[in-house]
Image (cartoon, rainbow, N blue to C red; front, side):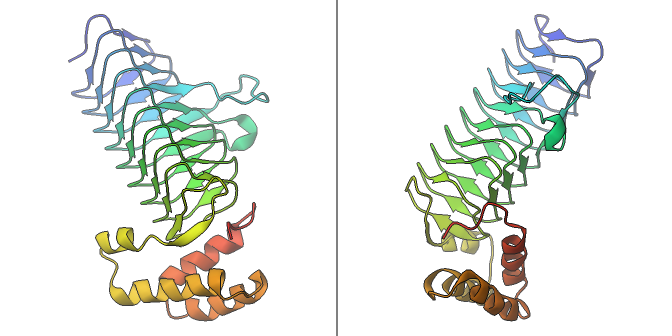
Length: 257
């Protein structure tokens, strides 16, 4: 199950039925959950906790020091959940001491080749990161979000659940839930991710409520404060709109508008 050329630190904890390829290096203070499969030439540094049933392809590098000039060697960690697919040359760094101390990736995510997730990011569940997409430090990504190839997010951006970030789109502001961002380096909204919502079983009345909220926020011409007041009224009848309103209130970099 574990190739004889793999190097495993004595402090590492390896779960049941873990497979590990040739020349893989597992560092100190690494925990790997049951049935996880790790390809050859993978490097995992600690402190890192990886859950069960993950698939990690060759040449991935997980748990390395954060690429942050302020990092001074403090103890920080990387936490990865269950059933993730992490493909070739993916890099995920640990957190920083003043950024929360941890980088977190949830469950059932697909990270294609050359994806980079920087220090202190929080990635939800069921997301897809296509080739060469990247997150700078401290980015939050909600469940079911898709980043297409060569897309990325500036540090401290927040991206709501069910958003779709198109190919080559670079985000510099927060993206509310359900939005589709254009193939434009300015990162401008181009409607809702309606196709994704339908695929995930959203009923027509839910989508109608989300569309109404989108029009209020993006096409009504209202100032943000007035649009927020209208969203507050709409949120009384729609949990999805309430999520959008809560996201708006948590925004720190401002909304992409």
